Image (cartoon, rainbow, N blue to C red; front, side, top):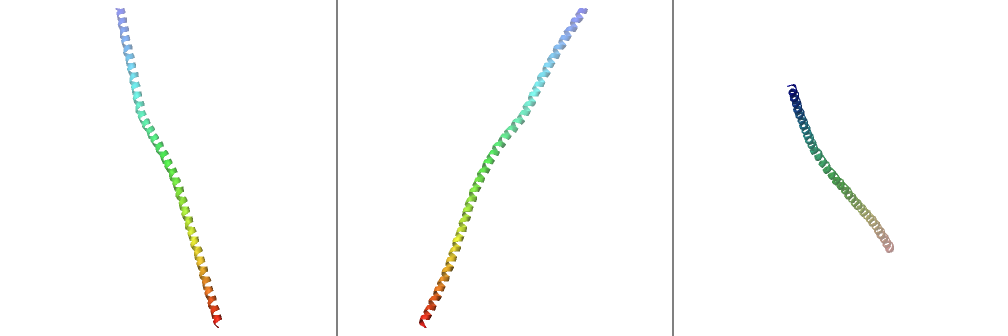
Length: 125
């Protein structure tokens, strides 16, 4: 009878150990699944952030290229405007020179007319 009680007790303990081992394995598997689910959930956010950063980098490069092209184009425009301004100044200088010559010619013409009139008046007297 005592030996049957001991065997009974050992059998119950073995069953309990097996049940505990099964529960431990299930708990480990469940915690592993939970951990994997959490990591997957976090990885989705990280992957989205990575894609957004990649897109931002591409757009920043494109913006930088556009800014450089705009700066070059602006420099060309400035060169054209400076050339145009210089040409306008030259036209103004030529116009001023032409007015000076015209005024000198008018003055010479008046002087010659006066000299001619005086010389004609002096020859008629």
